[in-house]
Image (cartoon, rainbow, N blue to C red; front, top):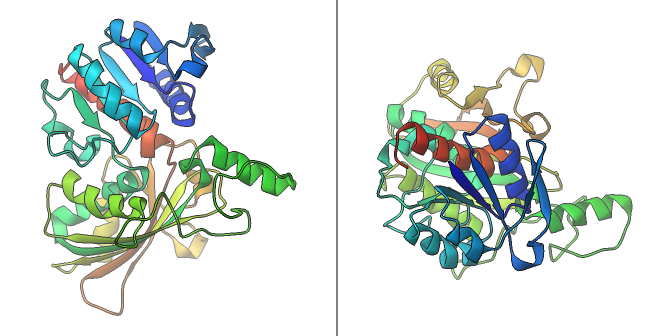
Length: 329
């Protein structure tokens, strides 16, 4: 099993290598791939050193799988070249997510849609993944009408430059800015770029991607995405209106039985999800589960996950595992 990691020296790429090692992914040959400026650098995987190669070289090596985390423009240009060489690509960028010819996959929800013909598979946005992990079982039972989500997203979602900005601000050092304003002691209602409708690209991903993953356009999602000064882990305040009424104990039970979801919901002991506890874990954590008392059939909940793991690297690796287990590559 020849596996290429495209963007191996980046933040998600490094976590991807860590997850592959932890899960004992069946690699016979590892091909770390990065931009020209990183070619020749060395990365370590399972106590063995590997030289980073360029994209052209990686395509010529014909890997079985290429796990991409190198940005949208790189994916648009290079994913088809890998696919043409017979490689199955799992892509972390937004490049292919809303392409009607490509599957958008969260393995626990819709991996069964995958076939041998799927040579480019899209990994959803980090905020979308943790949201749909909790929405999917509830939608199946009660049928969603409308979702309102406000996110509290960590700087690691922007990348290493943003993490450095926060660290510099905490240390009182002037340095390169990833954001137009300070992030320390601040909250920026600005994730990704603004679109013509006044929403950011991140907010529109949250609006559109759940419908595609759940293969259902009958419900709507309205989002506000905010960047906060946490180093890792995204949090979401979620309000869901259903067509059918629900029982709170049943909601907790449904979520508890969902693979990959952990319920942390006990106000008596101050038990609720927080980024500090989600760090380095693959589960999606949900709590503060309560009825919205202002309108019927409506639920409030608080969802937290490590955005670099289940929100990116782990979900990508799980897709690759599914492909191997089901002999699709």
